[in-house]
Image 1 (cartoon, rainbow, N blue to C red):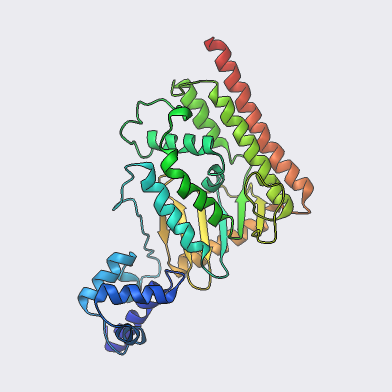
Image 2: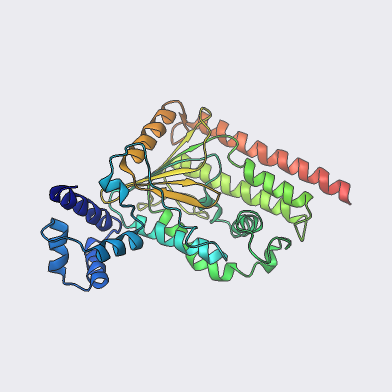
Length: 345
């Protein structure tokens, strides 16, 4: 690498750092504190007039989770991902909810942001609108994916789910910020299958303290799905409990996709920062800011969207069909659960 290539790499690294936050001057202040230098010194490094020291470079790489290879090695097929749970294993619910709250909060401050979400499962942001469903989903992850101490043999009892007291402020913030941002989503008719199977499996495994509470969860799902249907009708996002959007409501576009079922993939696009998130060991996710991967993902989403049908606003028949099929699956799950419960009594 010659001097010009080194300067170019340094500029790209620092621009990537500066685009990672919504407020550029705050990031510059942070770099001043991190390096122990003045703002003018930072601006010289951004322009390439002075070089980053090896200590400064390592500090940036560690703090902002940036891989050096993407700037110095021409390997167009290699993509770097950041997997936060390797350095921060989930030990309690706050370990998952608090960083997610921070990510969504930072995104909500970005100008001209758009979110694209292709998913085979109902996005977790919707579960957050229902405290019983939030509790159950977190319990299911604690019992399976995270295997948290005290949860592997513990039965689900929403009345004793004391963790929600500490989670509620972050969950409320998550909902507020997520609903500020416009987004496009691609669903299929089996979007609730995973959750419905979790409810039925945990019931048969004796993991409900009150077996009848399974029916409460199904009713919560019905309320939630009806609300999303209402959002699709208006083409706007608004919080559960409201019957219609207001002037500040963000745009919402929903498509019915039965062509390409996928894992949960979310793309964030804005003038300052782009990123792609994809589920790895659900609900954990990996993150990449690789421009080529983001462009590829958006081409894929655009292709799938052309083979999907809109269920937003005037697309009433398409909307009624999609949500009727989803509701049918809740009804079928209820029939299975009631049949099981009657045999146990």
